[in-house]
Image 1 (cartoon, one colour):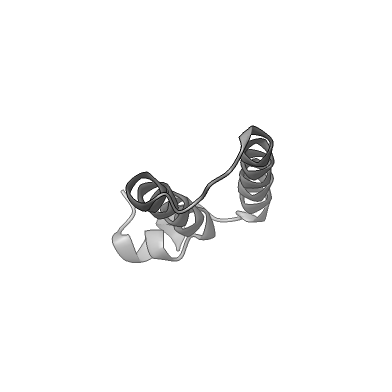
Image 2: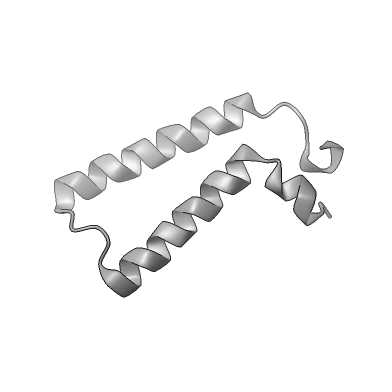
Length: 64
């Protein structure tokens, strides 16, 4: 299992952590006020960013 230091070197893990923190912030303080179309574009952008990070991944976390 990867260590916390190895996880911190992963752009994908950092991106996922940021998304999670934004989700929590939105739940508690209503950080984003988006309509359905804007939510769809946001989800599309998140999907594209995640796929992009996956293509950049060249080494397993255990090797970092």
